[in-house]
Length: 250
Image 1 (cartoon, one colour):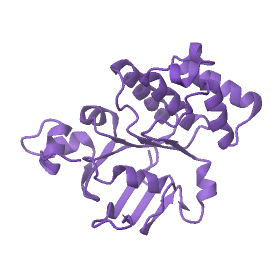
Image 2 (cartoon, one colour):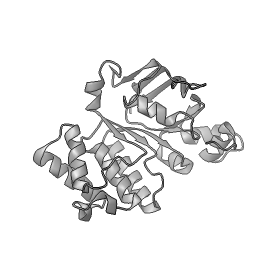
Image 3 (cartoon, helix red, strand yellow):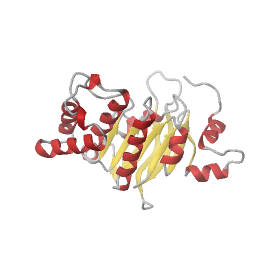
């Protein structure tokens, strides 16, 4: 990992129409190349909005984003080629097979023919889905859908991967398969920005994290260093509760 920021976020804000408060409020954040960076926060803290801006799915109200030295505002087409997106919602077509879904998403990234078919086969094999190649998505378990959802975002071997709650609502075995393969992608050079509510998972998975609440970053750093620095806290979950409180969030 080098020390140059791979993702540079400056003064980023987003206020939705008719909203009383900003969903993201003057965010400044640098993420280094090769990091696994966790963006953590309660419901409604601004995590998904931030990710949606970085993926160029929604526009910021103000501020700037640079990825690999390119402006998100003026180089969106070029950046699309190096970005992989795995949304929280399953972005698959139920009545299509896994292979048909993945060919569709591969085509969106400009992949075609034998190369794409081989890439789909290799990824399905890696994620233990080789027997499900021609099965319709509506026959898959939640964990299987999550794995195919992830494959759709990595077919083009992106330099950066944005993941919004990639292990939500799945069994332990599927979660471990996903996390293990994300670690391997990171070893192969991918920078990962990831949101999660699973504090134990983030503590052991991420090289650094930022905790966001009410659209503002309230703490950031390496999980182990943050734990050591906070008296009376022995886990990342305890730090999270200390900083964001125990009040329920909708």
